[in-house]
Image 1: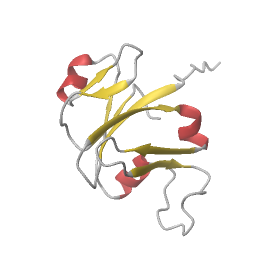
Image 2: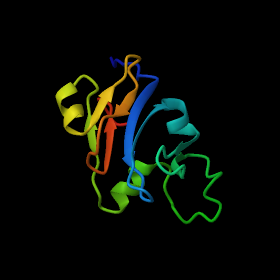
Image 3: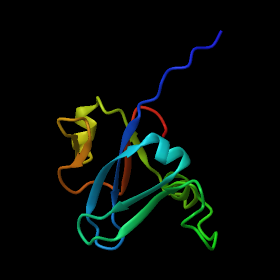
Length: 121
């Protein structure tokens, strides 16, 4: 017998803008992450960052060859950190915290790229 546990509908993702070095944190709908398009706007410079494109709609030249930013980071040999949302100390060490509704937000500068979720998106 197998037991399938439901995944949370949303998860948090923090990243640093490559243009202005501003830390950003967003909450992402899991359906958009796994089957749609996710674009985040930098709160520092307004640049738009393509984080997931499962449809290929935005990668018209097919030059990125990734469906989400985690795949791209891993292909470059860079790492990412996954954090359980209940681990308040680790979130704080990364300059992140949860808002009252459970969304991810930044508190100060932190390392390059993290995902706050107990399991892979």
